[in-house]
Image (cartoon, rainbow, N blue to C red; front, side):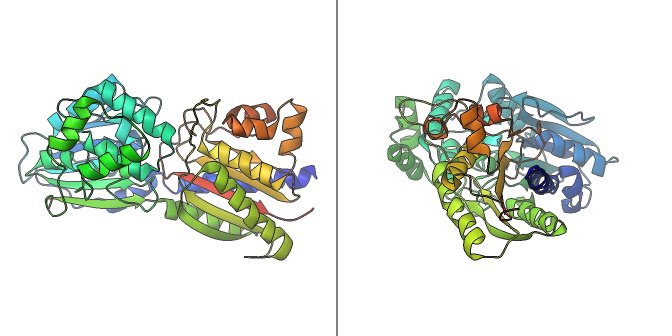
Length: 426
């Protein structure tokens, strides 16, 4: 029994690590670079991978006179020689987020058509580079971010609101760089890889509108301040499709690529993978219940594929926090606890889920692993799994059982990876 569990844990961790490694900027960025520019090459960027991407660019172009600035999350910094790295707060912006945004706009001023701007964009940029729209304050943006994070809104809707309350997102950074050419190299962390959603699309045209942002706020019962109401009714709209013809956008790593790497690793272990999708969304606990049903079908009927099998999925689930608040946990540990409760100790089924940036929510773990003994071990530690799930305190349970997966900052971000290994009874 212990040998089977040890092997299952090893397979799951290898699969997760392969997904993360596939999005390492040092492995994927250089292939997407253009011919070296004749004029200046100015670099800007934001996101949890921004510093790592900047270091990879410096390594790929040692003989180019690079300059510029990027911002990443506290603790995600890496050494660079020519590109300045700033740090700010995530998931709620702080004063350094505003400072960073102003530095980005200053960096792209007064360029010429001979100059090249390379924008290094990855998930997390919405909070890390936050400049309030005219008439708004940082406190306004912080309050909206907190409300959106607790609302259960999917990332796409959250970023529609964020870009319309910003002076730099929704294509405004690209507009400020004219007439210089702009090339965006992006690591996607959003379902569907929509360039306008990754970091709220600071370098791409915005197809959404003020009306869309107002409708989303109303849908989730989030109150606007008077200044927000004025801006969303009378402010200057974001640049629309067709208006940023000087800017190109390339994806260098995506959730689909990460899942493909995970599947290849599974095959190397003699396990047949099935990718259920790279863009799964919805409540974390509901997703856990649904995927438990698929895992049971594999174990009982060999459908939709025979054992040993690995059910893979990506995307970004959500956790809606009720009026009573919550304990500690992120969307991946909540998903796993719901999965474990639904499986109720079913033999031969193990799973891992984690955020590929190394941080699930605001905690110090990427995610966790569950086994057929998870619930029993939790109860032995004095915890009621269902009550813990209802209180959104999944981190505390997996901390008590010793099942948290701690990677530290991975310096990349292709969203969540979920893997369910179904082997049957040993």
